[in-house]
Length: 101
Image 1: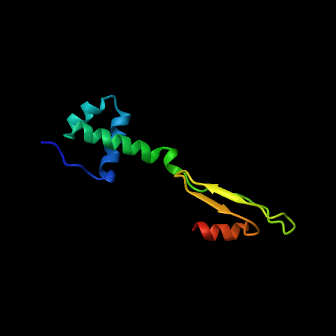
Image 2: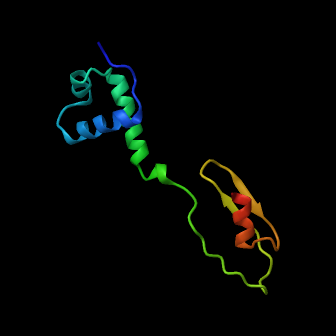
Image 3: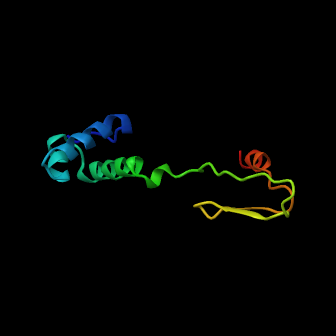
């Protein structure tokens, strides 16, 4: 009988064991009584979790504050298409940080 779907803390060690071995996904799934499509799903989730793409986020940016600078416009575009515009003299990094939190 095949096992039901498990949680990541139970499946990720199986994925790591499979990656360290020489079996195909189907062979590993059969030996451990997983449905092959379920094991394939967890392999995909493991790769997504551990990929650099999954670790995207905001990076620190140094913006020099110059009281004599001409007011500027700052545009921040997120990976999901979110657009954030700040016009005029409100380009202070502390102000922008508060807005993004």
